[in-house]
Length: 162
Image (cartoon, rainbow, N blue to C red):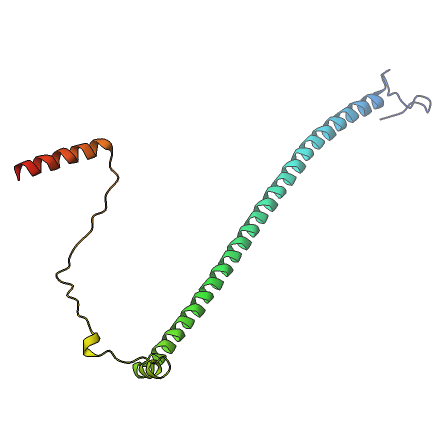
């Protein structure tokens, strides 16, 4: 760009328009348009980045929470298994103590000396034959009026023909 005079520094040779201002205004509009476009794109990028970070963070927190719950349940199960083992060993110990303390001779001497018991005589023993007494009791079922009526008719017919 060549300048004619210092007072005409806004003009170029052969032109009456201010070329510099025009270019400056045009460049500013382009820069503003680019800046707005850049701001829109960068705002979208920022929003999507923040959303992605929040999603990843929430998923991570969910995974950590589930891991904690599973770990807590596993510890509870392990405690229950330990309690089962302890209880089973206590039962086995109690069974051994019962077997050791159930000596029939000791029981008989305790009954004779402490309780004053004695063995029964021959005349005190009563034998019951359980093979002859095979009776069963049938409970009366709750039946409706019509089923009772039908049963009574059947019984009457059976009695008449028998």
